[in-house]
Image (cartoon, rainbow, N blue to C red; front, top):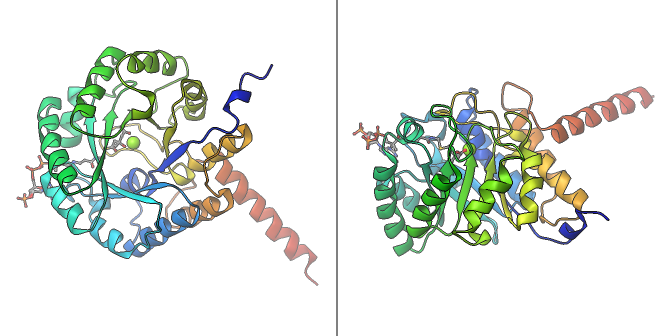
Length: 317
Ligand code: HMG
Ligand code: MG
């Protein structure tokens, strides 16, 4: 008996976070025009949701200072959600000005990370987000919630599943449509995922849970595989595995979208994403940063392209 056969035909929504979570942590200065070209390539790959940028303080995260210009330049395709992070009402005003129709607020499971990331306690941040959600939803926007350090914190260590569930419930009570349970620095492993999901599912429906893995320790794909039998249908990932978090030392890139789509295709799980077009988007952004992308699929594709080029050269008269 094949225990994975029941996954065949299921549909998974991938939230592409490369332009935000990926580029926020790159040292190379990626131009606004290249960010726009990257998002347009991701749209061509038919990613259903793309986190384009963040309306955060440009002092805190200079890489996202051009959020409004990126939104102004991209070609928005019908049916694709183009989203952005918003930390406060000032960020919401900027997002509304840029014509954004879906935003995400981001809280943490641990006090130290909350203060380092957004300069507020968890309680204060939830009070801010209540105002952001009320005004955003009043203006017709959808709001997603992130819950960082849910599998462990770089400053405080282990985090109890009950604490994660309590904070996820508080985020949902603000009016967010789903909570992305986030492994900020890529600590999670498949031994941790089922017990956390068991705890969360006693307090919220699976439709309101998304998972956001970083791949620092090489366990992100395995974590997805551990979560699929629970019926989780939304996973975040970044093209080529770009990424990290400027306020989380040691955080490497997100789970690579390329690797995720390759695995899901193999399992017969539908995503609607074109892997060849996604590979082009990854190759494009790889050419604009100063290091190779960590995605194994992207590396294999690049090697294959290289050997095909060499073959053509050898065959040329
Ligand atoms: P603060 O310094 O406490 O803010 O930062 P403030 O309210 O005191 O304002 C200070 C100055 O910033 C003022 O300007 C404000 O106008 C301005 P001044 O009067 O000095 O000229 N300001 C803004 N400017 C533009 N846009 C805004 C904005 N807000 C204030 N939205 C703040 C507090 C929350 C703003 C800051 O800490 C911040 O922007 N933090 C964001 C950090 C961040 O983006 N981290 C990475 C994203 S989270 C992540 O990666 C995790 C995730 O991927 C999930 C996971 O993996 O765990 C989502
Ligand atoms: Mg992240």
